[in-house]
Amino acid sequence: MDKYFRFEELGTNYKREIMGGFTTFLAMAYILFVNPDILSAAGMDQGAVYVATALAAAAGTIIMGVLARYPIALAPGMGLNAFFTFSVVIGMGIPWQTALLGVFISGLIFILITLVGIREMVINAIPAELKYAAAAGIGLFIAFIGLQGAEIIVLSESTLVTLGDMTSGHTLLAVFGIIVTVILMGLGLRGGIFYGMVITVVVGIIFQQIPVPSAVIGSIPSIEPTFGAFLEPFSNQSIGEIFTVKLIIVILTFLFVDFFDTAGTLYAVANQAGFVKDNKLPRAQKALLADSSATVIGAIFGTSTTTAYIESSSGIAAGARSGFASVVTGILFLVALLFSPLLVVVTSYVTAPALIIVGILMAGALGNIEWKKFEIAVPAFLTVIAMPLTYSIATGIALGFVMYPITMLAKGRGKEVHPIMYILFFVFIAYFIWH
Image (cartoon, rainbow, N blue to C red; front, side, top):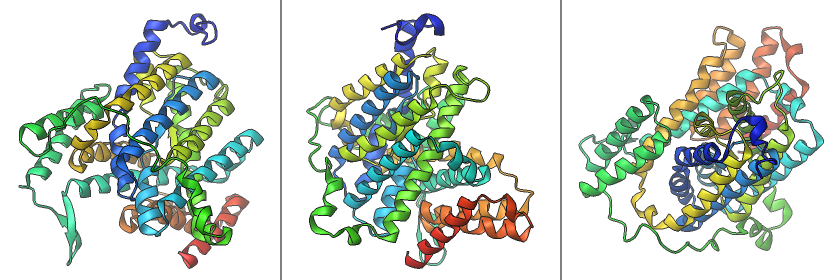
């Protein structure tokens, strides 16, 4: 096994790989509880989503480790789960079963374009500034959802939103969680988000703001409510009723966000580990194939898009260099199936700090945008600001893609715009018309 994972060539051993895999798991274990919390708002069974999250993460991470042999872990993506729930299901009124179908199809398309090898063409077609703007906008959107979940931000009839009751026990617990998580992250503690949630839960139980769980380890919840649910739309709807303009836009958005989020994460983590050679990532096609396969598997189990996690960098920092670390992480996700009773303690006040911190990290992409160039600043700003204000990731992306060709033409730089961007211009115009 050590020969297959090239331990000697990479200068690693079983101890380092196991430690690295365990570190990565701790750094991203929060998704096991945050994802069910977010998707349950779409009407999905929380226990079933917990199982689907663990299985999708385990399958995707093990495939990445064995096929691409990289110490990169996968799980249902933050931002993509928020888009699934708040933009697609709640915002567009699309049933969650149909939304899962959108995730499934986007995964199949991702597999196809990976095998055909047109990844570079698509990446080059969309300007980097819009990619950064989408990432930052999703970060603001996630943070906004967290602030709402903590009731730090609440509804206001006069100003739409306002500051909540900061003397409320639940809100104070969330604020405590934010501060603790910020301190842990500031100290550079690996798994700071996860440990922040644990500390918040303990304090919440002590001050009777969170119910005491009946058990820590229990039986695995049934996955039946979500398993294969993506096929349900075909039982009572025609093809024309299912594949509406809305759903096509949803599929494209799932594909777009996952495509670039994965590419960015893969290169960032691989570069940290020293895998990138001559600005190219060896076995990139296999890594992308593992990611797209995980999305398809996750949709079958019943969860939103599965993607590579930047938290994998914590495992690499702990010494992981081979795909064996990913196998370890994947196995730990399977073991985590036994801890579903803890879901009762993971309320929105506990998950809020995780959402806000992840949002802050994603907002870092703002620094890569050329704000002094007006033709870039306008579409980028509209992309970023529209996501939290319209409560829709798709709308933010659509606004940016519509405005970009307009501002570039106005500046006399129309020839620099890729033909695909002009096609997407009309696609998103159709989105606004039929939205």
